[in-house]
Amino acid sequence: MAQTIIERYRRKGLHFVEDLGNGIELEMVLIPGGSFMMGSPEDELECSDSESPQHLVNINHFCMGKYPVTQAQWRAVANRSDLRVNRDLEPELSYFKGDSHPVETVSWYDAVEFCDRLSQLTKRKYRLPSEAEWEYACRAGTETPFHFGETITSELANYNANYTYGVGVKGTYRNETTEVGSFGVANAFGLYDMHGNVREWCLDDWHGNYKNAPTDGTAWFDSEDDDLSQKSGNAVMRGGSWIVSPKLCRSAYRYYNIRVEHDPLDFNSGFRVVCAFGRTSS
Image (cartoon, rainbow, N blue to C red; front, side):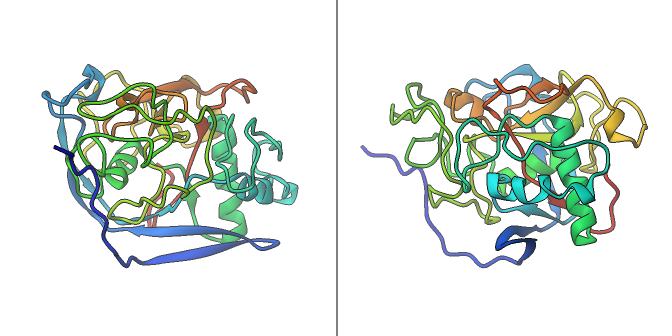
């Protein structure tokens, strides 16, 4: 018997568009506030200890990029040296080229600088999402391993489909990034590419589990230092990527990477931005 993996609905959501110049736009989607259980239940297939204990988190409303930041959007901001805050940005970073492909090989510091420049350009406060915001936005009210159901196929997302998850089947392994939104599958909040394509940086310092994690949706830092450009150590990444197996693309899956300088061999690392009303960067 064939299984239904995804159901398609037409939804309307609030959004706005930032003009980055030269015809380049950045679409932002309103994520309504609410509460959710963060982490994986103990019986979720192929879950890990780092995803527990599952805990209730309250989230304020915020806006999030409809897609991961594209190479065209990255270039539009990286070329604006007049907006420089803490560091220079290389306009042509990505290994897999394409204006509508996600930017990759981005360091955490690069992503933070992009957000700082975007804030100056738009006069609105942009930043990376907290890990809690990212998972809440990804789930969009669901409790299944993926926002579209219990499993995943290469018709829905870009990952290493030589591997399967649950009752899923093998599919097309593309071995590269794909254009953002190209699968035409958004979650209930209107976000695309939350599973696969590129891993996405979050603000938070890495912690091995959720013991003593904040429950208000803010980023979890080991110190109160507000200068993000001086942070060190590992930061959280979410969402999986084009090269990883499907279990690493689940809504609850957590990964980390060190806040190093730009690594030209890291073809996984991208990000999307958040605009949070009435809140600080943390």
